[in-house]
Each structure stands twice: as C-alpha cells, then as structure tokens.
Image (cartoon, rainbow, N blue to C red):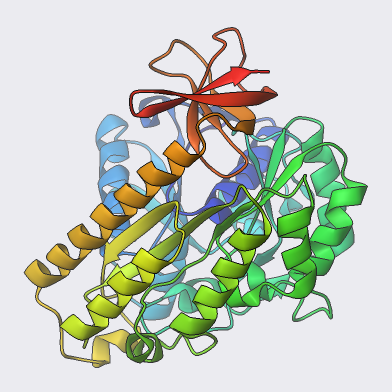
Length: 416
C-alpha cells in the first residue's frame, strides 16, 4: 500500500484535478495521508500564474524532502507543463523530485504512480470540499501576452455534455453546490458545436436540487442563454467573477485581450446587476503592466469606481518566462505598481463593505463551508458573501435559508 501526500496550488480547475487524482489513488487501494512526513510519495499539483506561485511550490517540495528524506515527489499541473515547454530543469533538480506530469494528464500520472491506467474513467463521486468542482473543459485558445496558461495547458478541449451531466448527478448526491470550472469556461463547446449556456441549460433540469455556480468567466462571453440563467434561474448563483485586468483599452490591447473593451465589459456587468436584485460581481485586475501610464491607471480607477463590484482581486504584474509581455519593455517601477495596487484594493474594500451593508435584513441561501465554534464557522451565500452561520448546530455541508444581520463588520446568517 502506497501512502501519498497530496498538495494543491492555484485555481479551482487544479482542485478538481486533485480530486480526480485522489479518487484514482484511493480506488487503487492506496491512501492519502495528511503530511509528507508519513508519506512514500508526495504529489504536488502546481500553479504557474505568478512567480510567487512557483516559489511556493518549490518551498513545499523542499519542506517535504526535509520532513521525509526518502520521499519520491511528483509535480503535475501548470508549472510542470511550463517546464516541459521551457526545457529547463529547476523543478527536476529539486530534492526528491522524480517525475513531472504536464497539466492534468491523468493517464501519465497513473503510469508514474504505478496505478491502473484507467484514470480517465475515475471521477470522485464525493469530493473533499463542501462545494464540489466540475471541470467542463481544459486549455485555452487565447494568447494573452501576460499569461503562460496556453503553454502549460494547451488548446481548448471541451468534455462531452453527457459525461458532465452524469458526473454532476453523482456530485449532487453529496454536495449542495457544484462550481462549474475550467481554464477558460467561456470557450466551452466551441470545439464540439455547443456552448456554456447550452450546457448549463441541460445541467439545471437534469441534475436535481443543487446550486450551480460559474467560476471565472469572461463578461463578454455571456450569451443570451447564459444571461437568462444568471438573472432568472434560482438554482444558478447570481454571481459573476469576470476578469477585467485593466480599464484602459490601450492596456487591454497590449495584453492581447482583443475580445472586449472597457465599455463592452461595463455594459455586460451593468445589465446583469440591473436584472437581478441580489448579484455579486468580482474581478481580477493587473496593475503595472508594461507601458501602463498614470492615465491608463486612472481609467481603471474610474471604471472600478463606476461598476457595482462586490470584491476585487488586484495583482501587480508578474512577468512569466516565455510570454510576449517579456518583450513589451517599458517596465513600471515596482513602487508605482504597489501604490496603484493599494489604491484599487482600498476602493475594492470600500465597495465590498457597502455591498455587505446593503444586504443587511435581506434573505440568503447559505451553505456552511466550515463548522465548529464561532471563530471557525463560515457560510457562503448565493452572491458569494462570507457569513457566520447563526446556528452553531448546523454541520459543515448543510444548506439553509437565512436572514442576514450585522454584528460589527461581520454578517450573521440566522436560519429562517
């Protein structure tokens, strides 16, 4: 029996892949253990979106080797995919690393681990997270100049709708929410004559009871079918996380994000929020992109001030080896990028607080993601607010209707 320590970095798609790896390992008679010190093998599912993400991976691999000098480490995911393209050896040179498995190649992972090579048929009926993840596609056909994902994950590949419905039915037996995820979910179906809207139209009636949530989705890839589901279907969470990256069209062009402008992005967000009284909207923003001027930044600030965001994720630009942004020059000094990030984060915090205040007294659909005492308990609403479940007896994984009230800076969700 093999004992495997599994650690995941990065996005929801990676967490889905880790659940698949976990199911494959356990169905083969092996066990997942909680620390590298007790493991024979360490499996790291890596992220490469920033330099910091790769640094975190390297630190984790070294910690595992210190905890268990005989450990065999395997790195899968985006960092392994990038390493294969770059032809460099830093990951293989880390202590204990025996193999790299690019992306989410489960057949290759099965071979490396020495388990039955039917990984594509193994799916986790129940995942370890409260909110289950359903990866509907892999890869990306776009070529954003700052992003190495296309190198790491390859072209868009959509999974068949029948297989996704069957998997979602299994997940619905154990989970109250299913998060539809992938590398670029808005491109789902482009290669198989379908669309994300068509898929969700099937999932809602064919998979009973659960709440569906869309993970990161380009705002301008919301077609009419998906719009109607987001604003009119009670079982589709009224929540959109739409990467903005910049409010300056000149910067968006330099980023290679050709499919929208600041104006078209704003039109979609404003239309969605106007159509449903409760709606959470988040965005990713990159500051300090090569060539970003003070005027570009002020355009981003003005757009963020205008739009009804309920949270923001703001990142200083992080150059990735092999991407076109390395060749754009005109680097923004780190101190300026830091100041710009601080300004946008402050705006984001103010908008988040105002939205939370607006929800006081309203009803919510709450899923308990953490149980325990008041310091540990946490629930998530349909519009992606973190709340404190008002009833300590509610177990992790439970779902209930609640009325929201304020306790200082915290929202309490009291059962109705």
